[in-house]
Length: 521
Image (cartoon, helix red, strand yellow):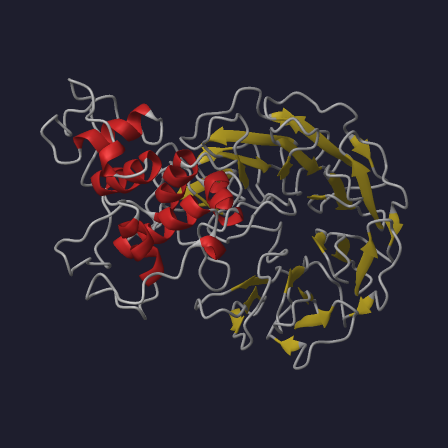
């Protein structure tokens, strides 16, 4: 599982082990401070990441064979109210989502006590939970809006051959449970298989089959589909062939990885064969960032297989891996629009707001690239789109270019010209703009202050005393920084430090833009 435990913008790796520990490493393989943490038995459960306490930082939640579910802060300190105790081994991986609609995350997990438990972030039991099945619950719950009412439902398989669905208050969903022909260890995947705007439920069973049901429990036409052996693997959903519809990818104990269209018809060229039993769940992702999906899966022949996609995809983020996303939340819709900006990412609301407002776009394959530096041409794009209310309202620009290095056929031409015409930006000289230079925090304040105030002449001179030691009153950007601080568009790194020469990244710029133009988050 991958997530930014320490808030530095880089991903850490978190994994449980049967040596009773949960480990966390930086990207370079060194241990994260405060880790590993110890449980009372082996850890077969996969950790999940989410902001349990609403402080903007991620917590780690995981089950253990000691009957407990643990939660730690990113520094390894135990979250208040945790661990919580069930009545059996917790092989199940926790799902994280807002069951009661209060804006906070709840934790949902199955247990060997035949029950599915749900707790608030502080460890208090959610009203209506736990719910009981007819046998052990080794599979992991999935969360999604099955009935289209805007609230989350909980879905999970049990060793009583059934798949259950409950509302957030613990009431059974009409039409559920549904019955398979054997144990259900597979974790459900949720996605719109038939393109009608509603979610379907997919899951494997040890009767060698893969099942698909509508939200009301009715079987999807063309399903179940059969493999040649047990199906422990959990389905992955994504648009493999670029037609705008979802395909289902799943491994089997018959050494094969299968892919079907939403109607149950096999995808051309599939199944593909490995050299061993396929116990693991497939993952879909644009590994080479060329716009199409690759399929990755591990096999009991000690190999990891990667098959290359060849068709640009339109929807890479439906349910692309075990438990849905890199944080393993098990919650449909948690990832949002981009692989690298999951729900809970420090700037995810502002990024999604800017996307909704047609101010910024992502890169091919479902990437936003939040850490990439913003350049002067891109800054002009952000500003001009935000000012005029989206891409379609930015005027084409004059017949002749103002700057030699931003000619009329330059991709950012109309945005740069709009900003120049509105006294938001100037060139380095009358014919030179330097579009490729990265934007630092002082220059960012200049762009935004002029844009919000309506030109340079409308930006006030600033206070008599400087807010920040590194932006004194005689600094060239003083009045712009002070304007942005007073408008609560930007803050310092601490009360006396602004960091004027720090380069601005795409995630930071989305935050500044959403604040400056009061975009709804």
